[in-house]
Length: 140
Image (cartoon, rainbow, N blue to C red):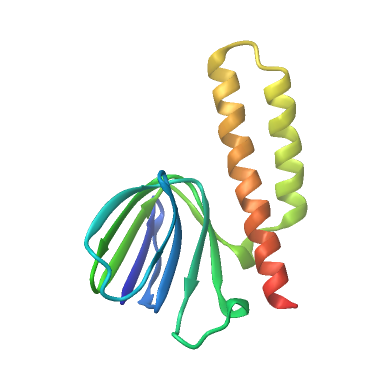
């Protein structure tokens, strides 16, 4: 089955895979070849990709994604998101510092707009830290 992961900056992944595990608005789903056609909302979270059928969990590739849309066909998947950061590219120290700044913004928010912006940043950096942790465990 073919996966395309497309962000605002272009195509991040364009390859054949065996399984995709994705966060959706209705909960996490796993997609295998032959899956029924589906279009669903992607939720912010960890996208996990298994390249080959026999690959163990330690071989999964992880991406931190923002919300978007997932289009599934029996032989292909297209994930359209604003951003997707591969686990190997995330610097944990930077994400921790950014999360602390976002928490401070939340605590100091003067109106609903600032509060919403802070919550979006908190969600983004929490997901990035989770994906970095999953990737670190994979390397062990």
